Image 1 (cartoon, rainbow, N blue to C red):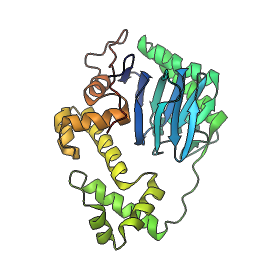
Image 2 (tube, one colour):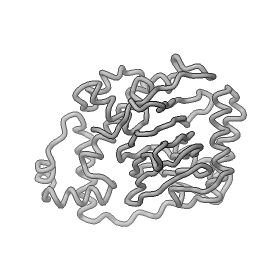
Image 3 (cartoon, rainbow, N blue to C red):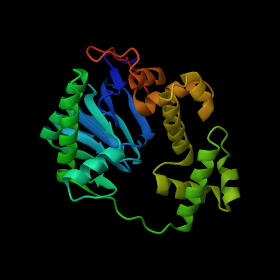
Image 4 (cartoon, rainbow, N blue to C red):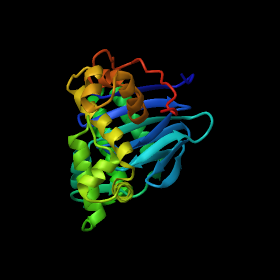
Length: 292
């Protein structure tokens, strides 16, 4: 266990559609993963380094790491002392509704840079957290909408229209559908390629090009995402682990913490509100996540 690391992942009931994470990490390394939501991470101390798609970027105090939904990225310390941040995970539907109310952007929106040098926006993200911790629903909701609108006007744009799928991209999409359906018992890469009428290496290249990660990495990310849904519905972590295809709860714990930032039990308590007081809440001391 890395001394000094701690994290709290939670949801404030009066701020629907948004998860919050307040953490200090030193040795922790997030594996490549995606979120269904947007990510607004305000760095308050140290430096976070992360691969965003295929680019290594760094975010320091006064800056935000901003990640669009379904965008592969990692995360690790950019300096020996690690980093501290406060993160908002607003749902795509919420961001799009704020865009429609406050900008000329319509439909699927996105942010143009993974690192935003904007101390004002960073302070607003911190202020949302503090208002939620104090149980001030009016301030938390108002500040959330203010920072989202500010970021959209300053750094937002429209998602590029999708190009027609190539044969490789179609194979990748079909492979993804099979993995989603057979998440708990996936086929081998060779069998998957054979069933799709292609070669293993061709499928591997096509899948990584389409989704930013190879099939086995994507499958782990998808399993954790499905496990989160089960945990939100009240399923016990041990049962969720087996349901999504992990061998046992420790297997789920390891991958869950490397993607979400806290283990399943802490995540479930923070999402349901059970045992998580608004002020002075206990934080989870994290374990180093560099090993698999």
